[in-house]
Length: 218
Image (tube, rainbow, N blue to C red):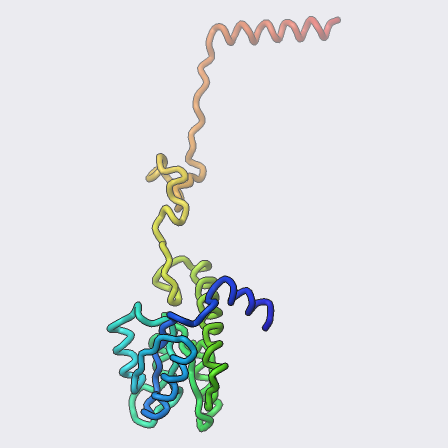
């Protein structure tokens, strides 16, 4: 295992137990087999018989899904796996499964729409177990994109606390509304305090000038 994968295993997801997957296949036998393999790997599985049903499940239980595994092409009409990626690929990591009958164009379309990873059937238990690594990579990539663009409407499945204080506001809250930039920091609006010239200051100034002249003359 590469060092990067070791780091992920150590810091992110040492085990697959508790990771929730939405498994999608319109072939009942394949769906049952996939469900069993995923459960053997330690994943919590919700099974859907079509991408359309999977989309309904996402809308019904958006917080109950960590990633989605779906066949790329379905036998019937309607939404296929690539269409599902297009609909939810910015919110969840979606892994596309290929039977070998798909065209290269379908594979390319899947990646263009935002598929997290492509897998070829027949699947093996070892491949199923290490899917969590792809999920972690997707999350890291999404988190990086969210950092570059902190607008929560444009994040990819990453929930960020975008409150002003999290973004720096509060550093100078007393200046809020007085030309302050985001985060409560002012730019070029601070007024310098005026110095009052007193008689005592004037006498000190005259004495200093006189002393300088005397020193220079010596």
